[in-house]
Image (cartoon, rainbow, N blue to C red; front, side, top):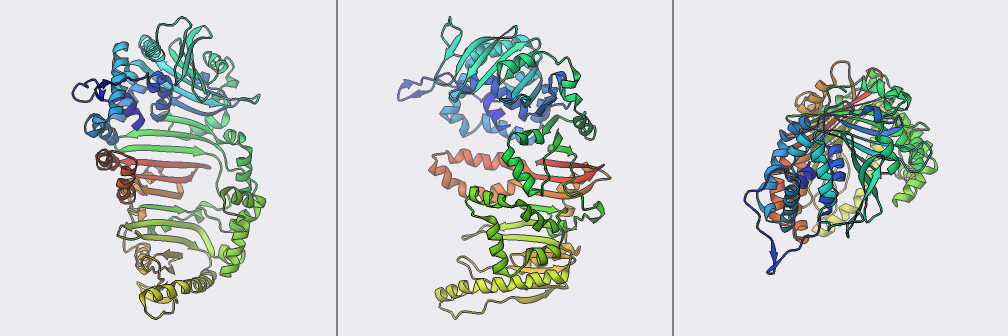
Length: 610
């Protein structure tokens, strides 16, 4: 949406723009690549902009489509997007303040005004998506004979005359009178070509990328090859060659809110992976010989307070774990409004060793590619240094749920203080205590060096670094104080209520324990979690939940360091400050949930705005 607002400039800035001068000379502006390549930007914007769910021009989507995005009513969609809190904040940012004094932005606005004057209608989202375009279909398909695949956009037109003028003006922008039908600039080369029976254009970028576009019938076509353009302009005579004949596509779309969605997507991950055999092989290795790719149907709805999404696919991530064994009680370990939190309830600890063994040489290849060395050797080294057997101790001790969260962050003069909590369901408490006792010994042995350094710096006698027990709220919290270069830390843990809880301090363990015992609210009581549960409805068995507070992270972790980078980059700090004050706060949290329903995996997500 930022690109959308900047590119088309939603509302005219107050006041007329005077000609820009530099050192007493009138500034010369070259033809804008953005303006002359508008058809390509329209394609990208249409892909990013939700609309009504059923695929328009559905008889033109091939059965081998890897991805298809259907947009059925651009006008209704734009009205919904305009009502979003973020859209209003972006509009205000673009029409007032320091951005309007930026020379590059002023140059862009002047070029847009010149193009609008030639068109005879305003170059705004309202005009384009309400009065010029009516629908959008985008798809990318594999080539069954090998070689280059096809990428096509079919944009339905409400006003064919305006669309034709738009293409003509923007394709010939600032071009002199031509007899060859070719426009050559430093940016792109655009030439007129015949596409089927229609007059069109062929664009070549400096990087060698090619695009074709034309108007035929009541549609604007944009494609990657001349052959695919010609094929897309004719509906497929055989239904067997259309996406609608795909049995899995029909099964999945019937299991989701297809007809009520604002945007609907078909995504064939299997076909996508087939184009990357090395990646596909690695995924199979990690999954113990089973491919985890699948085919998905995804839908989105634009709401007054954000964007909600749903997806569905058929593969069960853990068929060996029945629904009745899946728990999400670990959500209580996480604060109700964390920086981020995740609870995964289909964790099969018995597969840890199986998957690592199944990787074989792939671990070495991944490690070498990432510069981390042989990962298999590193795992073996960890086992030797901690005396903990992954296969015989840790895996049998763990249950089917793992939790991780950053509840709070306090920014001080030194390193930020983080309330970080890890949790895991315990299958065998006695074996887990044995694992943690060995881990205590490992921590004590490796913390002694830091203690000696800290004592030398302070002039005090070194103290013994050992774990001690604290009794609190019926829990036994084990903790150790470790001297660090900044401030001392006190990593702690407790085994209570069927969970192993690991935190950065005894206080974080005590707070997590209080939530687990029901004496304080946890993430399971948060609006983010309960909102997605309401979307999922009855009969859903959630096994994975994730939430992240985008605004708080931006304000507390990013904003303090922005002035330094802004000054080095020569950016206008006042303009950056407006972004953090007015735009970023409009985006609150992002949350997602995976569930098992009707022998399918259904996922739900929400980008919350305010």
